[in-house]
Image 1 (spheres, rainbow, N blue to C red):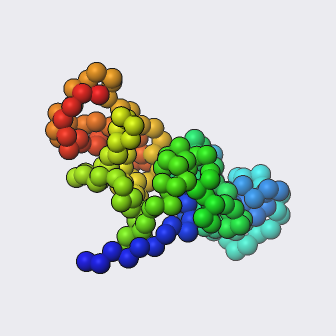
Image 2 (image 1 turned 90 degrees about the horizontal axis):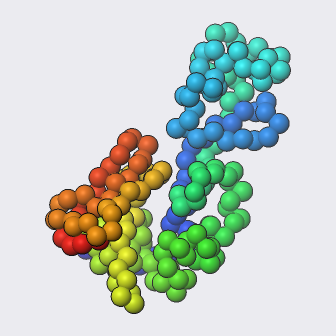
Length: 202
């Protein structure tokens, strides 16, 4: 299999997601799909007529509609490394996130290292590969530099898990056996345990 090198032309931390917004609201406030069925959101429910913004529109479109006629749908972009899932409208097309300038972003540098290391990244079938890292089973990578070993998930694992809300690691001094968990990630579907392909002490 021949690897086709394709320098990343946009930040690998940038993700896209479908979202909705209210055409009757003064500001274009995006609501991600994962939150649209919470109790306070009536947009896609039959009782959307109880929403004050619907009443303010004073427009009746058809009868007994399943969703509010003022709902708009859009694909938006956001940074998976940002502490909050802040969804920005697609004006992000003109931002550094969508150009090679992303390597100068402080959030990206913290996740991937220096800008020089970032430029070394290549893409294989759409997923980020860094040839300076050692990739292990379980979609884990390791890299040793100046006596410090960094570990992380490869791009495919991050794609499968989706947005990660929190991470729990083993305590310092704890022993880790092979195939024991070394990291627990809280994701949309619950908690995921990642198993170590090595043994050692934290």
